[in-house]
Image (cartoon, rainbow, N blue to C red; front, side, top):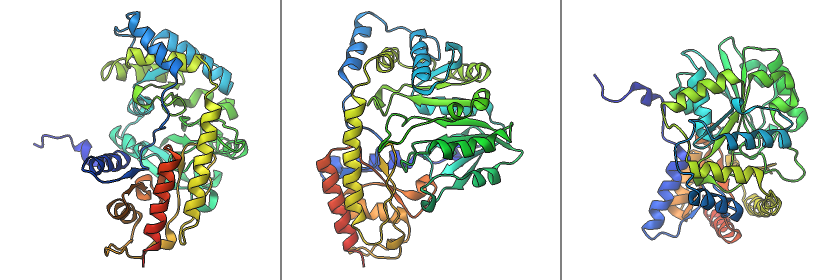
Length: 400
């Protein structure tokens, strides 16, 4: 009898975490590594949010809470959903988890049975397929190609739906591409979903506030109210509020689903960190003024990266509408060889050689389900981005 669960054989460790860890290890060993692999803003958490956390500690708000969040935070989330998305929820429809990942995982664990399928547009966040597998479901990846700006079409969604489809996972702006769906593009998808009432929608809105060039964020239940009762709208404070380490995510959806998610959380992690919850209350209720200057900084960094990488022969770099990633294609570099003799036959080989030979850490496209590409996170300083892109230019110029 094997000691470890056979379920583990269905999943793999997160490639983004693995690459970030490897870069940190090399840096600790004295290498001048520039990390562009982590999806984490380099901004500090805003002072008003930190002050709220300190005040919560001083007030002794350090005890257990309800498994899926304090009433004050659920109320703040309801207010946020109404204010920003035009969606009305009650606290009974809100679940607060230890990061956005836990809310997604809880929902999948609460709903998936053997044989259930989950449609996931590729490129996708690396954790989606593995969370589906852990929950006993079957991920169905559908490629959204560079030619369509990495966005799934209505025809593709229609063709992927089967009687076994339970969920459609939607992410806009996207990790890893930064691609954002317009209202018209999203309406085309929701029109398809209306014809298939057995399919639920899991909308990952984590990058909602990171939208550029006039792009207007929208979410499925907002675009098509008829989907409200079968949509789980997921979000969190990690990215826009620079609170990745605080670990607060949340989801809004039907009461029955939220109750099932609460049951799972009550027997796994129980409540998220109390201090983090009070900080999140301030994040959602407090000033939002810092979002605009932060986004202006992200746009400048995005444009810097696109300009420098677009100068590389054999690389195509689309312009994303949001988030803080670019997802270049290296189709024109496949088959070439590095000065140390490494053949670039895959995007994983490209990323590995780039780290080994140029001290730049990125994540290879196969991890996100679409090759040959790689993901750059530009959530770091202009100086680091300039140096990293210079190294990538030099590395590519030396390929033969």
